[in-house]
Image 1 (cartoon, rainbow, N blue to C red):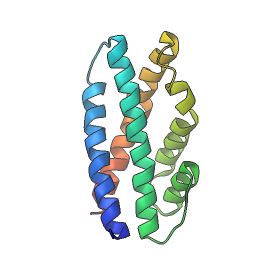
Image 2 (image 1 turned 90 degrees about the horizontal axis):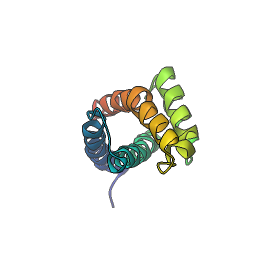
Image 3 (image 1 turned 90 degrees about the vertical axis):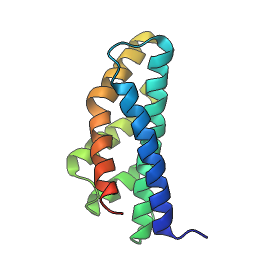
Image 4 (image 1 turned 45 degrees about the horizontal axis):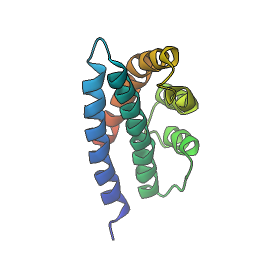
Length: 134
């Protein structure tokens, strides 16, 4: 059985890999419909790995949170993330429904701007902080 810190480290590797893919997708200046859908889906996967990696670290530290919202808020209380990062992650969680509508070109464009301008930077910051814990 893998202990909680080992699970955190394994999840962090997956978070890094997913973030690297998101980074590549965010570097594009223009997107075909397929590339735009890929950017948004890669963000969704990276976001899921973000809160689950935070959850693993919280569990290692003795916290027991299950929902993404509780994990994000408790991560702020535990000083794993800043207040601004907490706010952005909660915003991303709330906007997940908007982000899934890649078939609607107006919503897909809005999602692309949110991912590139708002959420990508916070995911990068959280990844750096979590990487510093191993």
